[in-house]
Amino acid sequence: MRVPTALVGCAVYRTAFDQQVRLLLVDSGRVDAELVIETTLMLRDTAGTWHHLEPGTGAALAPVLDLFGHTVRLVEVRGAGALLMAFDSGMELRVYPHPHYESWDLTGTGVAPITVGPGGHPDWDGQ
Image (cartoon, rainbow, N blue to C red; front, side):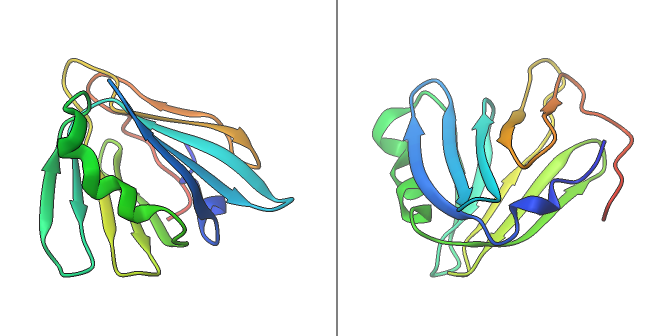
């Protein structure tokens, strides 16, 4: 699978959460993609504090709202599908593969569709 480097330069246009965490990532005319996170995520805020967040936990997901309007400056996929995204604000998002569940999914215009299923995916290109 290819690392979704097309996300670099995209702004977080919308955040949403329920049983999943969703980010709409847009770079007008180039990329219009949705990242769906279904398992635990780690989010570093602008003060450098790490938040361990679980989809489906309501108001506990509030730190995700601070991603709104910020631009992706780095995207990496490590190991079997650990997603790392860094933003212009200094915030950082990490999502690791889960042994039993789909952890993250990316679809949309300007990106190849990616699903990191149970156990992850061992082959990543484009670092």
